[in-house]
Length: 306
Image (cartoon, rainbow, N blue to C red; front, side, top):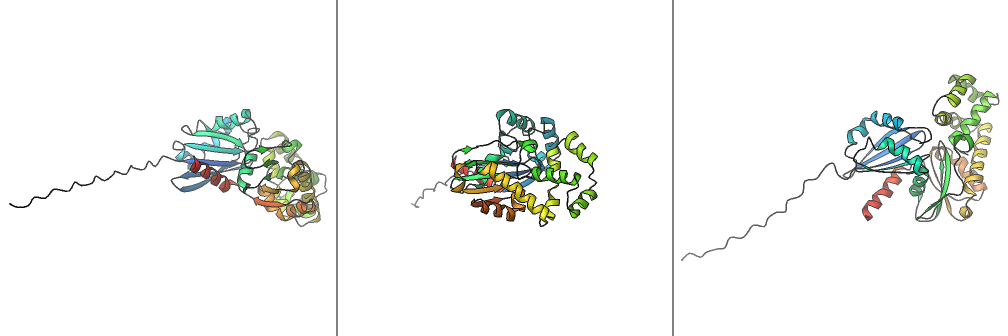
């Protein structure tokens, strides 16, 4: 009799679940008053896009929606986004945050949206495990203390009319005034004239048209290009000293912890910033021109812990 053999049962292969290409899409936004940087994270890939900055003091729901609809990159992924974290200038209260969310939510209909202050973004982006004073020097200015658990403010940011010491708004206002008062260095005066700036056009842009703060700060390249002039050096150092007096020395920890900076002004004028901080016994840690990547890393770590 021929031997019989039992047939080996074939192990069933576990079917791999098809990847849903529309999952795990996260957007992190860092918005100043001038420009917003958007990072789209999806299945390990990163895509960067930009829009105008959204500030609840100056922009409405319709302004935000109009800008979003004009962006092809964001329009292509809007229905796939599951989480959106927006950090913005002026987003300092639930009422102000609601203005930004009212423009984001109709566009990103399927996303869970959080709106937070750009001050928190600067704290998270600069934090290296030790208590810090995190400062913003961009279109506007602000500061906070962060110990890894909570963000603490000592003085408010008063905006481009009453505050913004050491920012693009601060320097832009003084340049405009000195230009009209005929106290401007000749090279800078000629540049303003070539830009077509007159008393009438300046008054219109500052007092009658929207986004006056963005216009004022947009004049910063003239100061940067002429920063070695005695006029410029005096103005820059005065602006940074005012910022330190108001927004850094208000924290009792300023002598013992690192002071970190976020924003274009701190980056483009870091030589002068270092000098003024040294004169005041302040130890600078990081200077981060665009904190978006650091913010993304922060949120990715949070997702990994979840």
